[in-house]
Length: 286
Image (tube, rainbow, N blue to C red; front, side):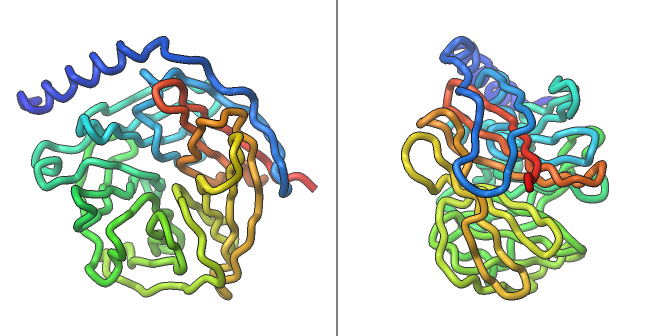
């Protein structure tokens, strides 16, 4: 049964959504300034609908799963989207229980699908005790959460995570000079991989082979967004791609890489606040 607190938050969000339902147009089609990405397609949503997945994106090969938040409303959400039609087929608009919100958790970030569950980075009030929130991919219902070990918390910013081979990879958002790791079995700290240059404004990430790709809001004015590549063996870090979002006000958020069907697809969600959320897919060109 929904609590009065949850119903009140939902009512405030619905009012907020109504105010911005017609608050702008979708941005122009995306392009590539540098790197070997090739735009394949995009699905655009008005912010009143897309706020529910304005922070993170992941996939199981059949569905996208998106996570979103409006921090000042304590609004956190998770949705399931048909990859082919772009239709939202399920959503949980107030996905964090009241007892979790009461502990200061208010900002879901980027997420990862793994073995029937959605794992999501989540920041807390004053950036203390960031935690991994876990949801059931079938029902989108909250399961449990795990606070990051103290030695792996850094400055408390926890914008994204991805999972490979039973290891959780993540960074803080700014002044990033290492890739941190957790053991998925018990969320104990596994150590870090130093990288050979400092990068910033990191919002999402996923792994292809032995390379970690990191989406960022770093870039020149005019909607340019850098994706970094990190060699997980050596820590060598390079500018892999520069995307053109088509809107100077756009923010790059989550990143997922799908290999369903054999060919890699890079999936981003870009956000123009109170205007639009756009899911964009790219292939690797020659």
